[in-house]
Image 1 (cartoon, rainbow, N blue to C red):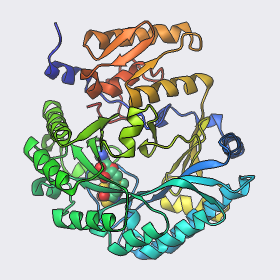
Image 2: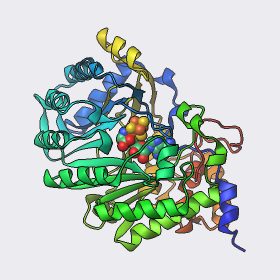
Image 3: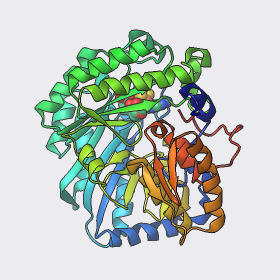
Length: 454
Ligand SMILES: C[S@@+](CC[C@H](N)C(=O)[O-])C[C@H]1O[C@@H](n2cnc3c(N)ncnc32)[C@H](O)[C@@H]1O
Ligand code: SF4
């Protein structure tokens, strides 16, 4: 007999990675890489990709602390930090440019944070011009920015559009005043709508809204209210994230307690309600926690098998070279990862000394690369095949026995080494991926590294 949803939620709501990378950061082996090896890997992939690359720039400053936030941010009202930080990022980019044998072809730039629009519109333009100067911008480029509506002006939207920005992602999280008070983020619907209207006026062709389920004091009614309001904004995409509770890492989350958080069953009911409301109005569920209109590129990519996922989330761009600039940014050359220093001061100091500010990294083994591809397929297509010619029998044996347990709960269908995620299994995708992740211990009871899977 099938286990009830309630039983499954209790069984599978254990700490697990979100798989924004594979191997996941806590399992990287920094001894496998150094600055010279990293630089060589960047150049090799650059050549293999015919000079094409994507750039992620982390802009960490925010004026106000949203207590739920798990991102790398620095809270300050001092805008004097803008100039030196932009200068450091441009110097870091110059170090990469010096390595590249030809002018890079930029396919994507993503400004993430923190709050990129903490910076003045003119400073952001200076940054983008500094990055694209002497480079080739791909004809079908995607330039995107994350904005907090409270700190965004029409000047930001207009000046970023003028330097090629065509995608925008805005944080909402929840519109219920009680939730907004609990997370210290009071954001009106009117202000949010104003930013959406400016973005349409300045021809951004894809607008994303971030919502979260599982926040303190959130209820099904708050989710209903928020999703219904978001629907009236007519975004092209909605990211509906599961709240990650990691108070040992994000101290702001100690402003409330576990008692203020919904139970796992309530959290799942919120997800179900929100996704039903989105699907009713024409959004399709894409991969893990994303929804897109049928007219959005993310939907076509999911439909034609070209959906991809990287540190920035789901994307339609297939690129094996991502250069991460700024504090805490992660770069990916497909064969290796490298992460920058996580505090602003140390990052700036290293840049000042003219060295790449690497603090962590990992060279992927052949096995890592094979499993990474399997994980991407599960995340993007809900299906994959473990290659028994390439993977050792012991790995296949261990993965199979973990998968059999998931199959018994009707979360996957296994056919030899083919793994197909069932509709029910889609809510447990992190558990399914963990079953083929050899770095994941079988007993996860004392892991304090990750948020819970649901
Ligand atoms: C850098 S923030 C967004 C940009 C901007 N700073 C803002 O707040 O609107 C990126 C997104 O990460 C998500 N996020 C942050 N902390 C989270 C957490 N603890 N659990 C789930 N999602 C989280 C939020 O949805 C947020 O909009
Ligand atoms: S949610 Fe956005 S604005 Fe709030 S603290 Fe995090 S990065 Fe800053």
